[in-house]
Length: 243
Ligand SMILES: Nc1ncnc2c1ncn2[C@@H]1O[C@H](COP(=O)(O)OP(=O)(O)OP(=O)(O)O)[C@@H](O)[C@H]1O
Ligand SMILES: [Mg+2]
Image (cartoon, rainbow, N blue to C red; front, side):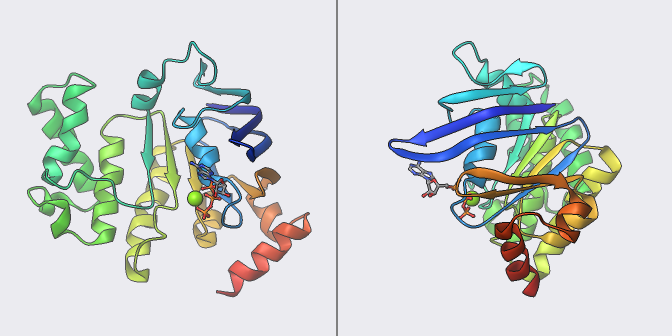
């Protein structure tokens, strides 16, 4: 579903990604972790063409993301993305947040969009808040709405960039539970930047560990946790698992 081959990227003189190669098969969940500044956010932004790359190839669902012929608008409509900071439209109700792109991009009627929104809001436990504005919701609630909004577009894959790292501890679980459900019940293809190692152990098929712009390990989850090969990953895990 997602294929990345020998991708390198620079910000000016600074090489932010070095020769990154990985794949996410349909229905697979891949967790991306690594120290701050190692290029995790950049890597997943490249997947839906939010950041251009200078070398290598990225192909999503058979369509080229890199290169001049890429149809990025079409691609982005098919890939759901959820960031660390809730990106809901603050001046719109929860209902309108979910309906907007369904109507404008997918051409659904208002009625169709509302029906789909309601199904998804029920799914993430937010149907009672459909008329509220984002400012009236907790961080965890906003993040669940953001996930529902992404799902409303019927994405072929979902990208998450530290979706729980700005949340208070008691809200982390409610968001992770929704993500676990997506992985287990829907078989959603997911690429998730997170330091929630419990989540990784539970649902990830593979873990990609990055350091200084390079993919240092890309291994089945159990192998990664039981016996990380690199010293960097061992060090990272010992620090993160202490918390
Ligand atoms: N727009 C930009 N211009 C220049 N440098 C950038 C830009 N965005 C990120 N960088 C640099 O690229 C490197 C990787 O950044 P990135 O945000 O991908 O890291 P990360 O692994 O997601 O880190 P974190 O865990 O803190 O979110 C960092 O050194 C960062 O300073
Ligand atoms: Mg980041």
